[in-house]
Image (cartoon, rainbow, N blue to C red; front, side, top):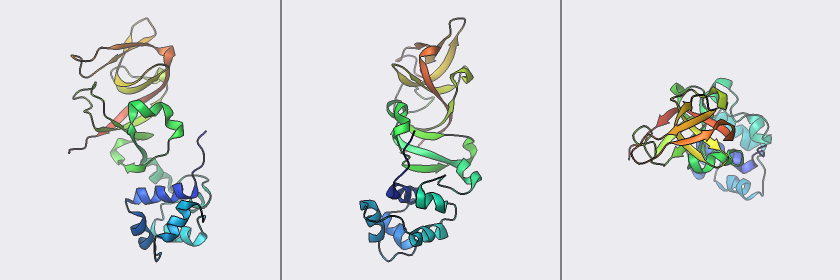
Length: 209
């Protein structure tokens, strides 16, 4: 079970969501200087009711009880929570198996993406032009029995974690994991029983550098 965020982690989550620096955020909510927030960061102070009220006054989407105690959800509006996708600034194939130990770096607002659980970076090359390296993939956890053949998924197996197009091997209770770049990457055949988690790719954000 994921541990409750510390006082600073909750404040930092709001700062990152607001896309501000700590000092600018402090001024924005009406604090004379950022030192008030740095004292929270150092663990010297908790989140006072005054600081919480200042944050919620500027960002009414943020739940004050969560801010003060860590209980509940970051956002008070259920609809707003539904379109906030936790973004982990890590490589999906390297980090998703350790998801329970991670905290989001920020939140993405992508309304057309629908119901997503998280977003991570894909920096591999196996998917070729289908999912270019450097893409942010928007993911939804699904049951392994709910895999739709032909869909792109992150497959977490007992010995392998990979993002591939999933094909079913008829009558063998196996899946074939197909790369987008089939000239340079072989297919992977995996027993369904070896799959511990599946994340379907619901959308992609391709950043043009």
